[in-house]
Picture (cartoon, rainbow, N blue to C red):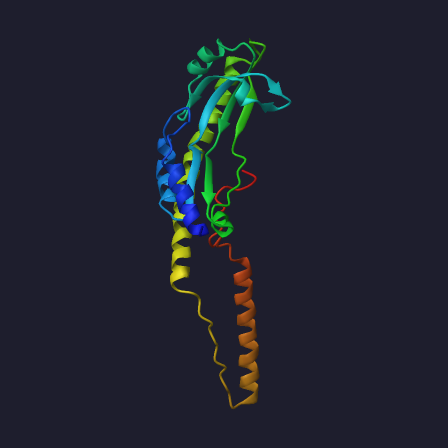
Length: 234
């Protein structure tokens, strides 16, 4: 079977399946982005989360929370308030962890070059233990501080989703234009001068301009079709 046809069949099959996530639908803040990706023939999404604040109760393996063996005490895709966390913490019997998780987007790509368009890295998360064996280990004042931090990250996450969406649109448009109009080789004409000194002077000047242009190209930070939206060290 043709690889393109096989990818289209796989895409149609995956997108026709029921949403098996806890929520059962795509998050509102990421719905437009998911629609954009699924509208391209070279992509389809397999799962997504716009970002969330959650409180988990379970055991910790080192510094890693095992989600499959824990209880979800609280989850929200909106800013969270302290009262909701305090009420949820009363149900904790193990080690309760407050987490903020940014945008999660799993995308199946047709080719490696298609996947390069979606190159994104981020460390925009938060994970803090609040209780141990059901006993609260921090003050309510500290919980206030954590929620303020988590809510700020949630707002920043929304801005990053919008920036990612806009940059992805630009990258796809540039790719489409490139496919329609392949770059043509540009041949520069040399200008002749009768006077030797003038010719040498213009030649030297031209060399300087060429070197400056080369430096501009080297320093050009236009990402092309490789869209890196979130800085590594943020």
